Image 1 (cartoon, rainbow, N blue to C red):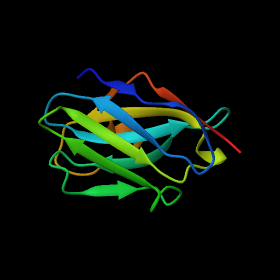
Image 2 (cartoon, rainbow, N blue to C red; image 1 turned 90 degrees about the vertical axis):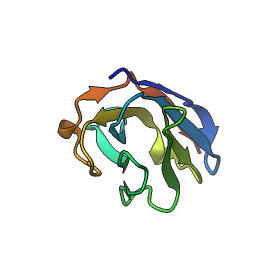
Image 3 (cartoon, rainbow, N blue to C red; image 1 turned 180 degrees about the vertical axis):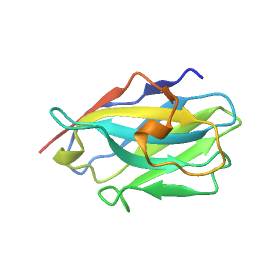
Length: 119
């Protein structure tokens, strides 16, 4: 499956951004991020129907993952952004009916979109 992530940019601490990922098909989806010099880390995941979601503790209560299957889109609404949220954000897809939080479990990856949060 081809994935196309978009929506990144430069914002100030406390601002909001919405990332989008175009993905057609019946896939579980996840968002991951990689900050400079750090390993890729899990951010949020959603199952195919959108009925189940899971978040990293670091973003819980601030980020919301959602999907619109009619539009083949997955979103990551990011509120109350912090400088430590600065990273390249990737969307990922895999088959299966559950929520998946481990990067190696995903078979398809988008190209990444840069989010920079200034203090």
